[in-house]
Length: 145
Image (cartoon, rainbow, N blue to C red; front, side):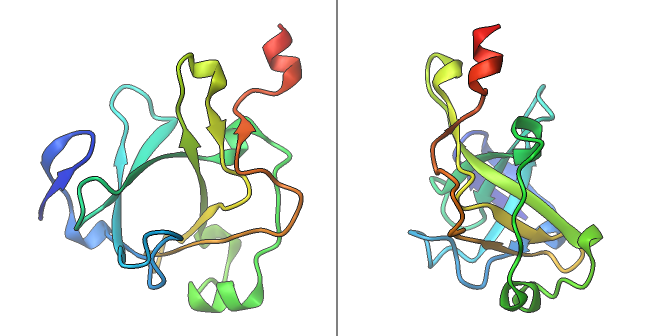
């Protein structure tokens, strides 16, 4: 199917790779279908793009690339809603806020996006743990080097 994207203009995407967010995303409850688009020349980042609304797109990445120790427990209701029966089905992404200079960019660890890669169902989970929506991409130790 052809969609209009925020960052890449009009492009063809595989309709069968669409990820259904039955609840939408916080602030975008009406947006139910998204695709992941690889970021050219940088496999670390992807774009979570609405298939309906071009300007609804988010730069995402694995939070584990930036914080290896990042972990949280997924509630039973979320597992049920996403039809998760095995850890192998789960892909976790976090939304990034890119700034200039890049070192000021942040990652949202408080609200990860959880995707069942087999069922192609997704949900943004709001954690009550002590995570921040504006965590620096680099740790203080890494920035000091």
